[in-house]
Image (cartoon, rainbow, N blue to C red):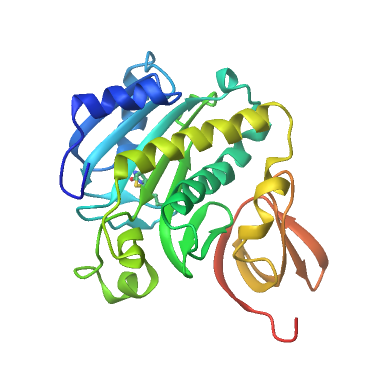
Length: 271
Ligand code: BTN
């Protein structure tokens, strides 16, 4: 599969054969794969999970908060619909699923560019050469606390020539760094395999975050500013704990945050 070729039935069959997916729903164009998944779950309680909602083109992709997800041809956009209990997880573990998603995106991309500078930014963005490569939006469908919709957008073969200067200066795609096109189907396959492995480790009670996050944490050792509810808090990032909380050393001492938006980060002088 290259930049502009659509997924074939054979490709869809390959995904259900080689990964833990039980169903792939393919669309040439959707407003947002997450919105579509949420709508589907509100009317059809029989979605076969794990299910993948895939769109060749997304016209109004959503990001966290009020953000939009900008994508153009060559980008990979999809949502994974997962039932928590059959995956062997408890609802307390769901915040970790979002971090594991970022790790599996990073691992899949690392296979393509093994020497490149990948990092994960809490809670679940993936960076390449200090620019945003992938965004993840995890949502709980209304009235379905037993499920997760995990929306993933990855800049694979797209270019930012037509994007706003703000996006052009902060985003990056795999092809821009590697200087060639990548096979999005193989990337998706590897991502799903890696995600399932990490989920199984979590279900077995392993400390998946401690094992995988530290070498790739973008924020560790950086002066980090977080918007947490009404509070804007700045502190030295000490990493992420086993429960997925961001650890900041602030004027109050060490504090742990389970939610919030990282507003900025910078290298801490003298450390
Ligand atoms: C972010 O960076 O704030 C999250 C971006 C998430 C984008 C993906 S693309 C597929 C899925 N559908 C959406 O509307 N959003 C997510």
